[in-house]
Amino acid sequence: MPTPPILRYFRFDHLPDHLAAVSAPFADLATQLAEHLPPGPERTVALRKLLESKDAAVRAALPDDAEEG
Image (cartoon, rainbow, N blue to C red; front, top):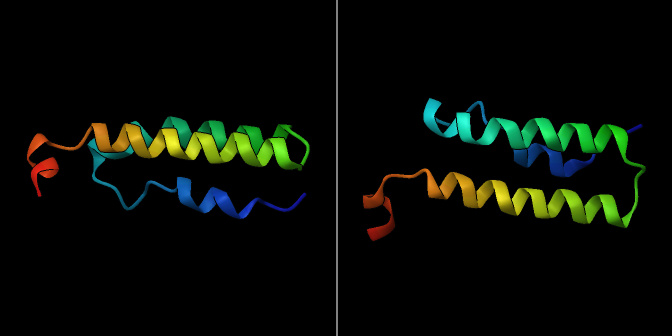
């Protein structure tokens, strides 16, 4: 089964350690969903919403001064 292209957005090896620790569980879950759910619109929605959640969690872990920029 081909890998969904959206999984590339769950990579975290480029992030600093403290942000990678936040992002890693989302990558694990995304991989599990891609492997265990059949391809289709609902899997796509699930992965997209998980990506939104991951992005929000990583932003929440940024230092407060990053929000002022």
